[in-house]
Length: 262
Image (tube, rainbow, N blue to C red; front, side):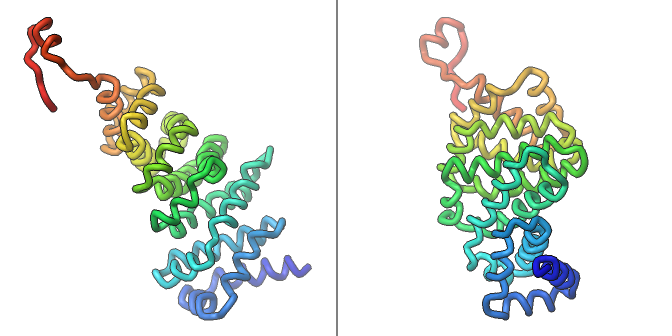
């Protein structure tokens, strides 16, 4: 009964005027901490409303972002995502929880030190699983895919260890499956997927080679013919990774090709 009342109260608060919500939650000591504690319950409705409220606060202003980051909510966010990923028969509410968690992640991973908190197989794998889960959805797959891609880019941005770990966990396979799947009909999904794949390709020869090795000829053709530059770039980087080699003077003499430098 108390949980039901809590959900009703939060639903009412979430539909109130944005400035009122922000003033109440950011200015009241312990208010956001109480909201965050709702993520630790086993009441899915309460978790959903609490996450939605935290996203709402973070999206509103820098002051809201600062207040949310000061909670150090990363462990609670990952716990929600892991819990949803472990459910055999995922429901729309699980997809909604995962989507909201992915929306919140970029706000709490703004610095290299914060992104370092994702440098472990468990945490990184949880975000990759969120993207994989989008491929199993029939409805609203593109919404979860887009939010998962945004979260993944936040994890990888300017952080070489995380990029290498993502490659070790075969993240490129999930990304390419996303491009091959129905969610790719959404332009934003393709664009963000291309951006993440491009980041992996540019992280070094290991990343570019990993992506290139997963591509069939049809995949490569589709990448190169895509109208989005973010996706086309992945195809070009894959070609470069596949064809990359250096001419020696002996090679040039044997083939009558002048040595070239790029």
